[in-house]
Image (cartoon, helix red, strand yellow):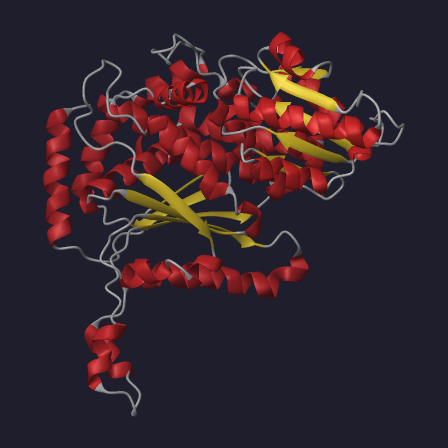
Length: 483
C-alpha cells in the first residue's frame, strides 16, 4: 500500500465527511451481465483518481493474473488459490455432474431398490453456505434438499424426522475429512438410516473431501467425490461440494452458473482501473469505509431466491479479510474488513431499515436486484418489488429534511411532530443489478464479490486466503472437550 496515497485519501475523506452532498455524477460499471451503480458513493473526481493510483501501486492487474496462473499466493500456507480454474469446467465437475443427472433421472437407488429423490447435505462453513445458496437460487424442485450444519443435535434430528430414509441420499462434505460437526452429524444420520431401514444403508452415502480414507474410516463405504487442496471452503461452491445443488438444478444450469463466473473472470483479467467492475467495487468499498469510518456493511437482496446471499457473503468477506496483520506479519495500518450483515428486502424494510433511515450511523449498503422476473407472468408484481428497492435506496441517500417534513404535515398534526419525521439521508448506497436472475448471472455476481474481496485484501496487504483464527477456535474446542 502507498502510505502517501492513502494519507491523501484519508484527508479527502475527512473533507467529504465534514460537508457531504447527496447525489453526484452518474457512475456505472457493467460486466458479465452485472451492473454496479455507485453514483451514491460520495466519490469525487480527485478521490477517484487517487483510488485508481492506489490500484496501480498495488499492482492489482498482476495480482489477478498471478492467482489465475496458479502461483502460490496463499503465502502463509504455501498454496495456490485455484477456484478460478474450476470455471468453466474441471475434472471435479466432470465427475460430479453425471452422478447429479443420474439422481435426477431416478437411476440412483437405495438399499430398498427405491429411487433416491431427496438429498440430506451435511457440511459447515463453505461446505454449507454455498450449496444452500445455489439450491435456493436455482433448484427446480425435481430433487429436494435439506442442509444441516450446526452441531446442535436438534438440527440433524429435525432434518431426519422430515426425510424418508429409503429415498434419501446423505452427502457429507468435509475438506479435511475430520470436521467434527460434519462427521458427528453424518454418523447420527447413518445410524438413523440403519435403524429405520433395518439394514446397512448401502448406496445412501456420498462424500466430498480431499481425504477419501479419512471419510471412509469415519463413515464407511460411500461414493467418493474429490476436491482439490488448493480450493478454500469459502470458494468451493464451484466444485463437487455443490453436488446436492447440482442435482437440484441440473447439469445444464450448473454449467451456466460456472460459465457466468468464467465470463466475470475473463473481464477481471482484461479490464483495468475503474473499467474493471471488481476493482471498482473494491475501491468504492474502501472509499465509503474511509469517508464514514464505517465499521459495518449491509447487503439487502431484493430477490427471495438470494435470501442466503448475505450469510454467504459474511463468510466470504470476513473469513477472507478479517485479519489484523499484513502478509509480512506487521499490523495492518488501517481498519480492514468491516462487519458484513444484511437480509432480504422487503422483509427488512419492516425491521432494521428504521435505523438505516433515521439512526445515527452511516452504513454503506449494497442493494441487489433483478430488473425483470424469471416468469413474465410476474411482471406487474416484480415491478413493485423493484420500486421498493429503488425507492428505499433513494430515501436512504437523499432523505427528507425538516422543511419538507413541515410542508408535508397534515392539518391536524402539530408542528412539533416534524422533527420526528426527518430522514437525514446521506447513506452510501451501491446498486447491483442484472436483467434477470438466472444461473449465468448468479455465477457472475458471486465471482464479482470474490474478486472484489481479493482486491481489497491486496490493497490492505493481507492474505485473504487463510483463516488461522478459525483454526485456533477449533483447537480450543478440543481442549474444552478433553478437560
